[in-house]
Image (cartoon, rainbow, N blue to C red; front, side):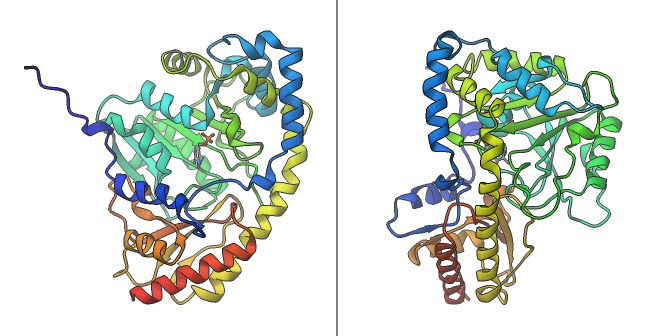
Length: 394
Ligand code: PMP
């Protein structure tokens, strides 16, 4: 009898912890600080609903039949114009529409990773990216970008690509400064590694001005063909249910990724692409943004105030200037955050432990707290419950 191939590459070492926190959503009265969900109050429900009806009526072919693999030219042109700068002029050939940013990560893995390939990844790293690439059994060089004097060149040597979330990383909430963005671009040029800039949080700046993207920084005035593969999404500015994301990259990279997409889902929903296109064109996304920023800024402030009051003797953290997360480190290294996550469920609070953001799955030192989903009152109560759990464990 022929032996069946092993499933090992598809099994997630962190399955246990991930399964626990996914199941936690079913626990009544639980305060979920673990997820990365936007607030439902932030969605422009009436506008999206009106747009959805209108685009089906006005564009039945684009919305209801099969679409071109790389995306509707209408939306690709809008995105090319939105991201074009004098230094980095873009055309639709630089744009691939994806089914959320999540599919962008998956396609990058399919196109760029041979089994066992090396990735230089900002550490800690986004769980969804680790999951997308796990079947290729990649090796990782961690990039601790916050370490004083860190030079990405060594980590990127021999790597297929470097993976970063420069604006308010998931999970660390960290903003990569402009000088370090330039170092990453220089290292990509020197080493020949691609530079994946995953940017779902790029609009969510609560304090200060937005920083230039690496995509924008590496243009030289000629049609864009640089090392940056940029990923965007409507998930945080409009609504994740639309499942519309995009990749902006050199035209030959877009062609390769489109070939991979063809074998994956053929095309992203034309209906959702047209809703996104009109939402950009008619300013729905831009109009909704100030309200989203006000809502999230207040929630971040409420979370950090509660943490200052209840957790400052137990953890260290930095208040993020944007995004959706606070990353906190336990002062007592004897308390593992995997154990804390499980113990917290009995107290009615759920956090994400650092092990799931570690390619090795071993880091037990830290945790991620989301502040966008819950009201200030719930955030404060969640922090109280978390502090009580830690004190019981000490
Ligand atoms: N990258 C990062 C860093 C994220 O945090 C997320 C969403 N949690 C994604 C990509 C994927 O987002 P989506 O598929 O909703 O566009």
